[in-house]
Length: 253
Image 1 (cartoon, rainbow, N blue to C red):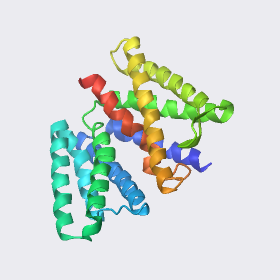
Image 2: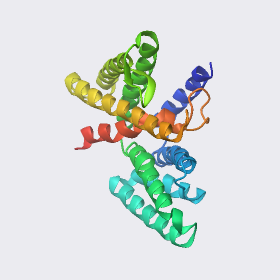
Image 3: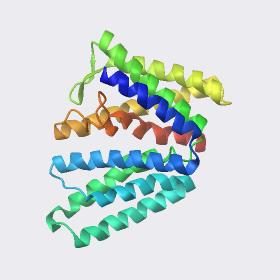
């Protein structure tokens, strides 16, 4: 029940912000979400004993994502400056013995969370709607089909509940959703949309498995409990971390 209630509140809110928010507001909101994901990622590192930067590092996490409002060049510049800031702070704080771990986990969190979500910011809102349709419908189809028909494990050492049947259903759902919403909102041939949706969906499923690897390495089921019934931000956005840059590339290569 919690899962349904959270989705019923979150999905309309996300769609409303995506469609109606001014560019700078949208960039800031996506930056805040990225910062929450970074915090969860850093917490996984701390749990594993790697160490983590202090909470101040959430400010660069927001900045890197939000700076994409000026284009990918601004995003990459913000990433470089954030890396320099992290290394500079590390010189003057924390045990020297954990310095490499804190820098490594900090830079990884920016690349994995802030940069990948940053590609949403310059993306036309119609494209974002198509991307969300591909990912959300695919996730739902995989979940339902996996529970109903799943018999063959997809990656049992990483995520025991994911099945081949669920992955196939998710891929089919993603392609259908991508074509339907893409034809409605974009001036793209259906065959192009089918190819883009297929590659994006595969990237999203790999992103899901990649996040499962991170959690399994630290022995946790969910990255946090911030979303009742759904776990944490990493748990909900794991597909988008991989799918967003891939989807962006198709329309900007």
